[in-house]
Length: 260
Image (tube, rainbow, N blue to C red; front, side, top):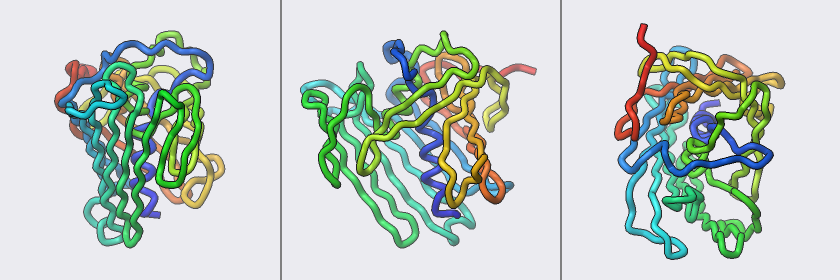
């Protein structure tokens, strides 16, 4: 089961608020800035299983003649889990500074004795995605994991009603896939950096070797200008996993934990 921890951590972090299945309004980039760095810990019971650090950087690279931002995520197992199944994964995405859509994505995964890499180019002029496994046509908004995380933090969700269904389209390895997310309302939730007023979501998960048929995944995102995921909880066949925001720096706006 440990070999699934990093993939699950990455999925939880990057699938935040998705786009409506109907037309949505995306604001300009008001939620983040270069220099932002966020750290998450993933816990299995009382044990810290993995950690992911996501940061935004300026880059001189240009794509389709336009400036870009560089997003980097490093994910790794911790402590005892390094002996059970050592993981060192790195993901990178270059996104348009205005539209926040991806131009280029890479991943390098080292999971025990398994290694995997991929290089993905999003051509918005021809509407084609070129990856190591082939060329794939696409229409509309399609993202990689990292660009999805930052794009969705800027979507206008002010009109959401409880039980509204949302959808995110993303590219992974050999095709374009969809994720359905349900909005569940507002809650206060506690994480490593305090208690926050949050928006609560339920992304759909597929039963398998680590999820029960009725397993639920819940995700809480700050109900403020930062729109940062602060906590997630998912049920497994045995036990559960909790993702927790443990560090945040370089934010565009101060974090505002609830004062008690």
